[in-house]
Length: 248
Ligand SMILES: NC(=O)c1ccc[n+]([C@@H]2O[C@H](COP(=O)([O-])OP(=O)(O)OC[C@H]3O[C@@H](n4cnc5c(N)ncnc54)[C@H](OP(=O)(O)O)[C@@H]3O)[C@@H](O)[C@H]2O)c1
Image 1 (cartoon, rainbow, N blue to C red):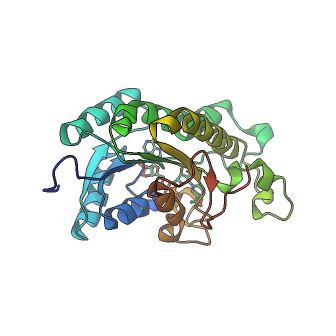
Image 2: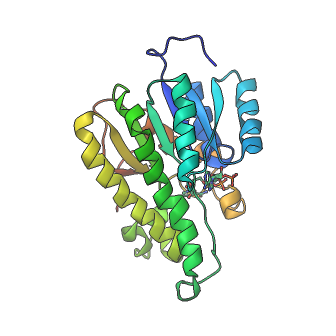
């Protein structure tokens, strides 16, 4: 993938990077000089994404990784470790939205479980599994892909566009992810590892049937910014496309 020595390489892993926001975050980090691992649960879809970015001259490779499958994550850690001895940036981007037409009173527990497996337990598992590699980096950055609808302040503010959204499983999973972000940030701060949640805005991707105000490239901006913050940057925060923190 690269001729740089192991120590001087800056490495990044983006989960769910075969399309949508993840692909654009991977592209943005690749353009900034990172060696980027494209996390994808499906090998063929991952290979197709790698081919696109490699053609643009970016240092990318595939890491088959289903964030809901502990064995898959373990294999991904071992595959990664064969090539690199540290991970500078982890973007927990993979996520899903199911049962969007069901009001809370009819949302199935199965849909809630499916959602939490990918959107909450997935980022926890992946962060825990890659922690030794994050610790081995000089000041690693972890970004959790949250959402505007994670914010209890915004979904209860009639002036916010997010107040019209009432997605029990999805919204509460991202609120939980924000809490997960704060918990990891507290533990990892003494190690120089910064952990922040971001929201990309309302982005047209397959997740929302491509109905959204922003392109995936525009939505990737907040994740790329927090993935590349300097030593004086924040940790344990929640950020959107604009600079200041989002309300929890
Ligand atoms: N679009 C928005 O407006 C918006 C707003 C706020 C937050 N977000 C968040 O942004 C993130 C990316 O979403 P997106 O809008 O780019 O949607 P997307 O185009 O549907 O992409 C989702 C990605 O996650 C992957 N994924 C799903 N479950 C996975 C699993 N178990 N293991 C590994 N990968 C998995 C998908 O893989 P497959 O291709 O194999 O399905 C795909 O690569 C999500 O966390 C989403 O909640 C999006």
